[in-house]
Image (tube, chains in turn green, brown):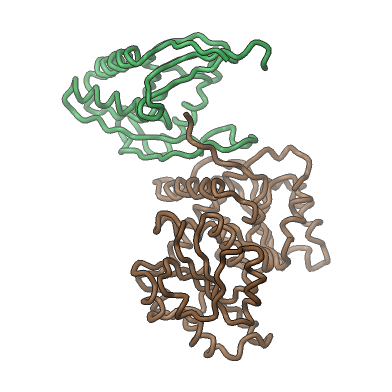
Length: 181
Length: 320
């Protein structure tokens, strides 16, 4: 396995600042914006976006967290189960929801998140912000705010590290060893 | 660094070979399931299109209803078959019924049976997952897990805590499953019963070396963090194991006085249904220490966690 770092802490800080500005610009402020982080690394990213929005717009943006484990479409597989995280959502009705996740890949996580959100309430609209878009979509889903587009091959792995979960902020691409499946 | 994953099992048969990590994994999963039950829509699509068959070859209301609610909260289709309304009366064997249920497309069998070991037999002949909902005197894993969940919810951790189980230990699958779970997590368990309803201490200590056997409930209650009373089956009297109900209640009933000997925040538990006035006094059963209602509520969440965690491909050959 060889890993190559693509983004460091400064890059990620600048990206989040830009996305925060884009959210403000696109929605004419953040009066009815609610940020919802997708478990696990989407949660700290959403919290950091909220802190940046609080700075620039001098207002508090509600933040929620969403675990999509119970809405997955690939449950009946072998192997250990991913641990379920908390789902804590502020009121959704008539809000402009910005879903936040670390990596956009097949789109299946977002599909699950959309289904779960609509079980909880009726947002006015839902937008999507991701730190990395690595392509290979399997569903007609796209992000409204993209930190960085990183073209990948399916056998590569994108490793996102986010404070405080991982202790550092970094994005790297991991190549499989030649010869390993 | 990823959060630790939760191990999966094909079947839930007993807790005798469960690790502490596995037990904690179920508890953590159940905590999230409990949150689901508090949502505006108390249902998630996790097991949509799956079929759960409740096979209850022994009477039970709360366990069957609890599994049914758990399966429905996960969007599974549930059907219940009992020995009274099936061809069991016509002499159909358990294995025949399993094959029939399998041919009808069942993904999960939740089995309650009077014979110890019946779930193992079913697991050998069923391509899906089997969850033991109580077999003879052997095991009742979902009950022990909901008891454990209730204890950890209140106490934080059971490690080092004093847990007293009082009643008809000898015939109790609830006591056995609780023993496995509690000792694995480092609790100090005391089993308290008249000698005729527990047998020799050495028998228990051969399997659980650190378990305390007592015939004196007053002494056992001292410093207890949990007092769990078991249901006294009235037929035990007829078997000559007890002199009289009154005698049993006098020495082994959970009274307010006995509860007051325990820790100030002691939890009083009972798997139900309760014989109030026999193994537990009415004022204790509904008193401030009583966890009986929490046990029932938590039962649904724990059973959701079990159904979620056994989910696995059924496209495999039968195996234990």
